[in-house]
Image (cartoon, rainbow, N blue to C red):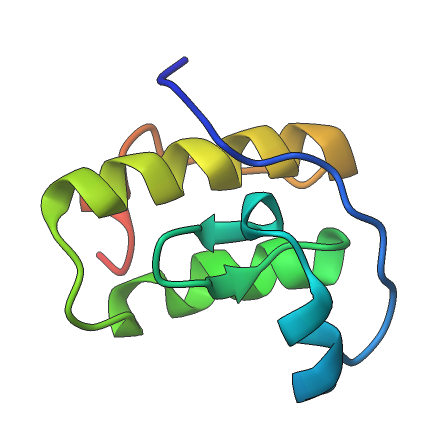
Length: 90
């Protein structure tokens, strides 16, 4: 598995802007941009579904984000069939 920055940070349900602002960078798929928080299984599935919609990120950012999603998915028992972010949305 590639290098990851994601660490579990439990928050269930809808996250308000204030909730998101309080989260550590390590709770996000894209930590530098603080995009796609992954605080429960639902948010991990959402990060996968919205992955291609994230703008202004490099391929290296996407590599890290996908590795973070895989790590969070394993933690929250979410199935990810894709082996690379390049397979998403096909």
